[in-house]
Amino acid sequence: LKDAEKRTVTEDGRLMLEKAEKDRIETVWDRYAAQTPQCGYCEMGLSCRICNMGPCRIDPFGEGPRQGVCGADADIIVARNLGRMVAAGAAAHSDHGRDLVEVLAAVAEGKAPGYGIADPDKLKRVAAEYGIETEGKPPHAVAGALADAMMGDFGSRRKELSMVRRAPAKRRELWRKTGIMPRGIDRETSEMMHRTHMGVDNGWQSLLLHALRNALSDGWGGSMIATEVSDILFGTPKPSANTVNVGVLKADQVNIIVHGHNPVVSEMLLQACQSPDIIDLAKAKGAAGINLAGLCCTGNELLMRHGIPMAGNHLMTELVIATGAVDMMLVDYQCIMPSLGKTASCYHTLMISTSDKARFPGMTHREFHPENARDLARDLVKEAVENFGRRGRVYIPVEPVPSLGGFSVEAILGALGGTPDPLLDAVKDGRIRGAAGVVGCNNPKIKHDYGHITLTRQLIENDILVLDTGCAAIANAKAGFKVAEAAEYAGPGLKAVCSALGIPPVLHMGSCVDNVRILLLASALADSLGCDISDLPVAGSAPEWYSEKAVSIGAYFVASGVYTVLGPMPPITGSMNVVKLLTEGLNDVVGAGFAVEPDPEKAGILIRRHIESKRKQLGLDA
Ligand code: NFS
Ligand code: SF4
Image (cartoon, rainbow, N blue to C red; front, side, top):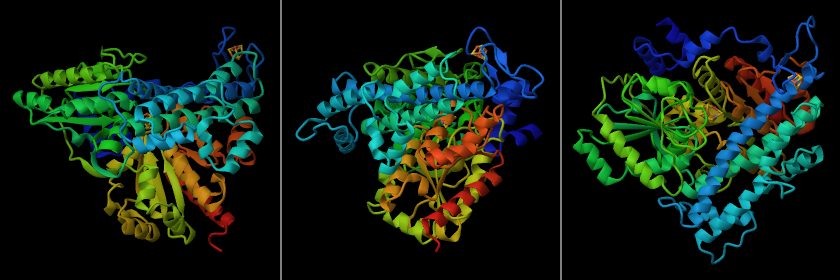
């Protein structure tokens, strides 16, 4: 009982942890406890397994070895390890983006039954940015040309990625000057793997600069392509109501959960769940209907575009199964704990893996491709319906919380009347002090959701508009920050603005690839003010991050000029040179840097101080 309260601040999390304990289900927190104390060398980034003369480790106290077998010192080893984290994160986002481009190409060829172009206007707009003639061309032809042009961004044919043109001119000039302009998406990741091979780049500064370029190839490349093509295929999000937490599961309905990141699978599931013949089948089996809900970022994709309910974030994924109410869970890739199959074996839940590149123990593999997706989704939903009758006792201990999602940049500008000016005016006259992104994961090193909720509450109380994505966005939704009435929690200025516009003080901007929406909004604000992103009173944060993707996101935020505060410490403390460059030196290079602060109350103070100093520099409170 006590343990549960130490592990999470959420009510559904606490109650489900107690249930899991009764059911003797091992969770991520138990496994974390079993791993502690974790290796001190690895925590500091001082161990290296890059080549087979190793593994090597550096003694941080100066008594043991100061160099690996090859001669690499602490600075080199720490920088190389961090560079590889960025490469893995950028690769994950960008490969996800590529999968969407492949679906776009398949749609163009008429080889993707069930998929289509949901936002032809956005297709035209983006195609025009790529220099593609759109006049008089049918959408499918434009889609084919766009898919082809985007594939070009992945390779080595460009000097600059296509969508960096969306960044303020000053920022692009800075990227060119410092040699971190991203050229090709795969190229930068591949080059990072090359540079970090034994005997290549042994300059810790040049390694870190390339890490920024690699991250920019994610933010202004792979992730941006993922978001834009998802909007084109499935619709650009508009504000819509949804519900969140474990209470979105329905005792009397067939519950199907989608978990992972890629909307290619989950969108087809949604279509199948809505088809009348399958709903009739469910009713014939004694269910009141079919309830599709999401987990993690694939859930965010559905929530943003269709108002589909959200069962929970990263640390809730095992506990959702422990309700006994999930008839089927489908996963695609990323952030899916390999423990889930084992958890599900204690209940009736059918576990389905769907991606050719992601297998999991204890799951049945049913591979989705654009050609078979529609039919396979229908088959699987029917199997979930059949499984409804095999349920044991279910435990759904809470009522869901209402929330508002769907704040794409297009939707935000739409709510403002087409231009960012009303928002800028509120920032200029001080009603809104600034804006902060609260993004990223959960991590058992931080009490579940405590970092996100505590930081967000402090920011809105102090008239800072919060833009959130990913697991942070789910945490804030569960906390009730995303209904219009939540303006009550905000300071007087932000409250007045939110009340006038009828929006919450915390805007859900999507999944983790949708962090690019925050970049684009910041760019729009900077362009309106005629300044760079680094001049704006804005900040980023990842209070509970765990994944390599989050490292890439943090790095592209900073490289784009956004001061970013991390919660958990990354494995870099073995090199004070690296720490100093990331927290101080980068200010002179890209006009922004990192801070690390695990206590969200203190992180909030850092962000407020930063925002106030930027306001002063802009002369806003003169
Ligand atoms: Ni992004 Fe983190 Fe994962 Fe999404 Fe959640 S854990 S890096 S927030 S689901 S990707
Ligand atoms: Fe050791 Fe150098 Fe090989 Fe790393 S690259 S394992 S430090 S010898």
